Image 1 (cartoon, rainbow, N blue to C red):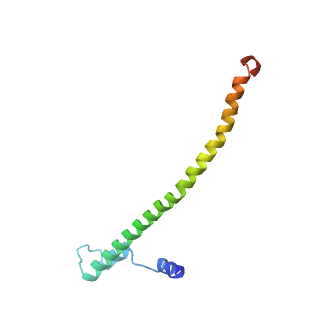
Image 2 (tube, helix red, strand yellow):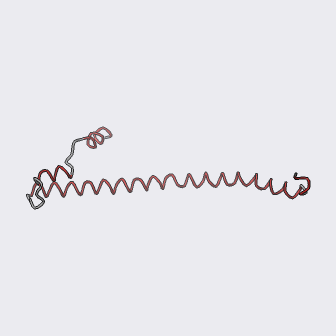
Image 3 (cartoon, rainbow, N blue to C red):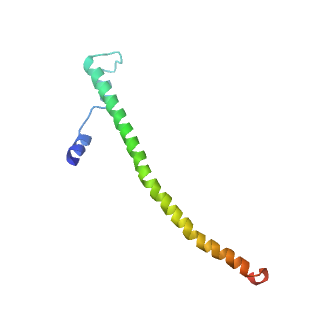
Length: 98
């Protein structure tokens, strides 16, 4: 499965420039083959872009909760030195601080 996917991704495909070259630089050329190739190319590129966008946001959704949990744990750990600092500030008089 993975090999066929990699082989498909690395296969030489027609690009927008290739479709333009088939038209011979004339944008008014409307052969059925060229229109079909351009439509398939546009749809394939759009679909690929949308799928990669969805995958990226799905991955962010997988990582964000872990980051939130780690942040809350670190905030709880930082609460300990803050509380100790406040306790120390109450126990020590201002003249002893220096």
